[in-house]
Image (tube, rainbow, N blue to C red):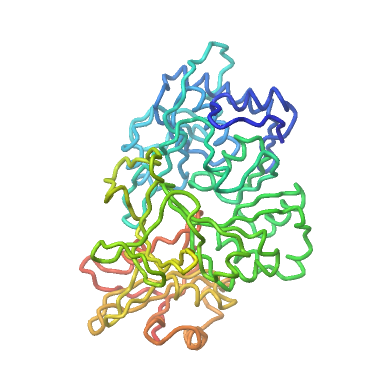
Length: 510
């Protein structure tokens, strides 16, 4: 790790060379067999920046990073800062139509791909370069400019239509991310998720900004996480609850054979964490080491809490730590009493600049308040408890059913790896509760768990109107690499063009 400790406001463009000057041989980044010292990072960054400059990339331009390799993503992002551009990591798994829609929104000055074949397969007509062909040893002076934004993540949200969430912070060292995630330059940092997602990119770059030693997983593997923590004496790690479940499912003797004593903080976010799973991890590692962050990519406000706090406020996502959070009822009146649910609204603290702006979507605000669509309530101590997304809520015979609650109960079963619950049209009650279940160990064409067994398991956990009336078993993952489930897309896939439920191959009715 680097001995240079940059002050708030330090230009991100100058960080690789500053860390290289103070700690040239210290490891900046590793991923699989690739490893870069700060001296190597500074050289590689400048080479890519020169290549971008030669291709006309300049101040405020978007550069789309269509890269699989984490080392290349980080290096290219730093190169963007050196020419004043805005890096935009994108998933290499995007369908051509999805990618085309995103590129149409940003009109990037350059698309950087992993190789020449990826470049040839790009939709549309955009300036492109394979990353291994972009660098140059040209020693020409680069312009001294600061990018107007240090990241521009994409979001499809529940609508499925892409939008860009342009960060309002210029490419100067922000105080926010390091404080919110409690990251320091002394950390040995482990990222387990792909960097084209916002939280993985933001936390990884923040760790590097401060000179931490960063380890990236090439792909998630439950045992590899434990092995990397032990091998590199990791102090800070990131997981999503689906990953936590897979690690918990390892045989106990295997899971407990690794030395995790170096780990000071394990953070999770991106999806609700079932209470039983959180309790398992708190029991295993201790509440002081388990941390959760709740907030949107927009980052106008958010909550954090430790496992110790969670044990005293079971099910909470914490108290607001930055910005402001409040609740509004259906009549747009603010809810001030604890225990009453409402729509969760957020805004930046008074006097703060805007945290973001949308490209490709209209921001709907009331007096600076905007919502992610969540429903929640506060307790008497100011801790926030989430119910679900309003757009995902199912109304069965006039009674509201929250999919997250049903999914949490389903995943308590030891053979259920993941679950998604959606509402489907039903003539009598208006909607029916449909569960899509991914088992931990499915057979080739058979399932070890029957719908009757699963329904019996739910009997003591959910009231009758919340229990699924139909259960569908699938072998494909229900969540994306960030741990998010897109219920609206799952629902569309199970409806005909006329809005009538179709019959999945593996569906069982209660």
